[in-house]
Length: 257
Length: 285
Ligand SMILES: Nc1ncnc2c1ncn2[C@@H]1O[C@H](COP(=O)(O)OP(=O)(O)O)[C@@H](O)[C@H]1O
Ligand SMILES: [Mg+2]
Image 1 (cartoon, rainbow over the protein chains, first blue to last red):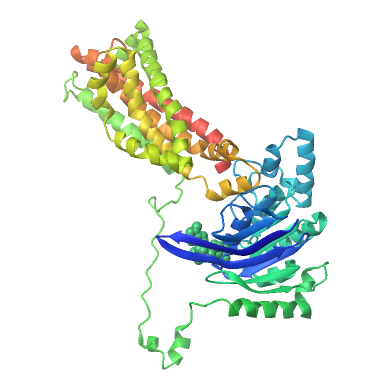
Image 2 (image 1 turned 90 degrees about the vertical axis):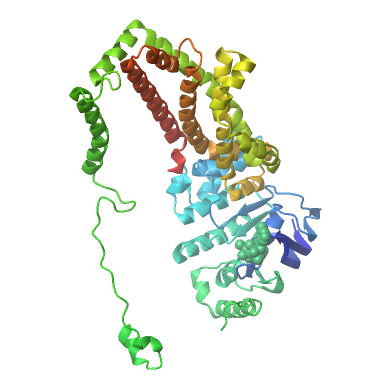
């Protein structure tokens, strides 16, 4: 399962004007990898994921999964947004079950799978709650479980912890690392948070803004077993600083005076 | 803050006088979006009903207004009781209710799917919005003569008026509700493997249902108005017919009694739909 983007470009038309959101992006996501794409807001991160998810079609270049071009959205590429994509009328367990309800599975089989992912994401205790009764962190865990239960080849995360407070965010970072290691899922995550990218990723790609393009890429030679203490190690801080420099250099600032 | 600033002699702001501070008004009964005490709320509600009623009682008892203009509450009650006892009222209520059920029921059956179509597909919107947007502005009562020519004096023309009076609004309101389904919910459903029909059935419809019931509730009130208007012209039964007939014999007390019945049934419909809405929309909190 390899995800490959070759020279992908995306132009939006807005009020008759052409706006280039992505320009010649080439990327390869290898099986089992946790690839983090960092870039400033507006650098085309969401556009990139929406293209990989198949929700939009690139205006140039090609995206393939295992050599097959992506023609539309599907459960082989699970997507998690920053907020607000849970079905508000469905309980936690029925949100998670959504993708399985579309398949010819018997109830026991479906239940077994839902149970496993609820346990994995620590949601067993709130399985009958409605989304509005959950905290922001719990809601994101539901969204992650709902995508994972479909056994995607690659899990696409669009700033999934961007709306959370720092403590919850760190809990979620540990959780997603744990899930990644437990399930062996390939993860492609975009974020503006360099620390998060370094902590989570096995590799980090820096996206330059306007138009969005790959500015740099670096592997993260940190041990697989990462805890919050990892964030205080010299190796981590050095990586973080150098990537932050790259992000800053590739971001044309509009607030100088 | 100010002293720290004033120390910086180069800062022009140091020469500005301090901004005046306004005192905060005490919270009152009319503080925006602020709950009032239960007692105050009950008092206001009771007063809002008791004052007009008392005015009615006093006005009719004083003899300032002739009874043929303004019958006393007692006269209205006994006129209503008389109609109920003779079985006349039951027939009228049922006749009118049946017309609403048929005419508005048909309108709901047409407008909800059509509204979902218009709210979901740009093609549906392009095809139907201009015509329906125009037809909505034609007053249904203006269709009465035309419908009588087309459909005769019987039931079909009355049901058609109800239908015309409600179907366009309910369609456009449904379409608006459906357009409010968040894009992200639709997108995420596709990424979970749903197909178009499944997205409609399992996402668009459930998300829109509370809003659709709201639209139906608003338009049910309109239907209830239209039916009485429709019955004013050439009927042999129904609450509107009863009003016209009572007018012919100057039975104002009877007119009042029928108006009260119309109001009470209207409120009952509203309450029933509110309950359904609360049940269906529980998830929205
Ligand atoms: N649907 C759209 N129509 C027009 N322009 C868009 C659309 N979506 C995104 N853009 C533009 O493309 C650029 C990248 O947006 P986005 O992918 O959302 O960036 P990010 O997720 O990194 O903040 C921005 O300049 C944005 O204004
Ligand atoms: Mg974004």
